[in-house]
Image (cartoon, rainbow, N blue to C red; front, side):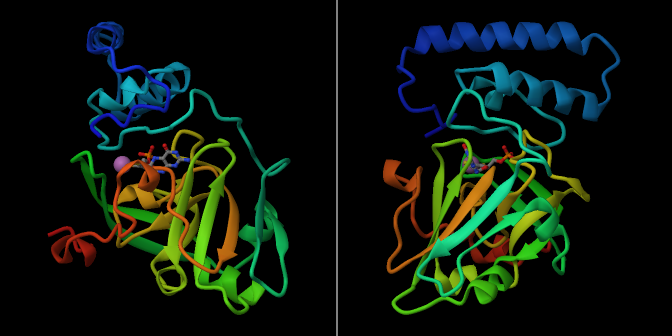
Length: 240
Ligand SMILES: Nc1nc2c(c(=O)[nH]1)N[C@H]1C(S)=C(S)[C@@H](COP(=O)(O)O)O[C@H]1N2
Ligand SMILES: [Mo]
């Protein structure tokens, strides 16, 4: 699933190559300016937002990350309108604001990020609220056994077992690379599942629902493994 096309994208290879060529040409033009690495990252992030093909994800990025979305545009949310709903098989369903999440104890996790497309970014810091803390606050009740994550892009979903979700390296992340998570990276709040491939780390997180069994997520319904564990060598995240 290289390039991870959005649903409904037709497979016309010529059109895609042409589009990628246009993006690359535009990018090359811009690259003649003395762009710093973060300038280039900002350019790619902005281009990915107006790119309905998803092909900006294929442009090289010296920062290492590629920007993925399964939809063409995603609303921007901030402290004035962001909410995270925790519900399902819990005793105390709750809607959190960004302020609520910021007021909770924050945990920083540094780990290698790996996408199934083959790129990786070593030793990336993420910071936020442990998912386990939100689950404890909600009080998981029987027969709760898994989590379904939903996103305010209106399309992406993900899943974890309850046991996986309770790990201390699974965060509802407010920061990435020690800065607030940008819109392009799924801000203001994304999931970060450090020991698993990055597709597990749902961007633009808006819902955490406790279910009685795992409900396969967006890519999992399209052939990805529900089990997203990294290989042992990468799971410890020491960058070796
Ligand atoms: N909402 C949403 N979350 C998502 C995705 C997506 O398309 N939409 N892509 C996943 C995949 S496959 C990867 S590799 C990472 C990419 O995160 P980045 O765009 O911050 O690099 O987000 C994951 N979470
Ligand atoms: Mo990915």
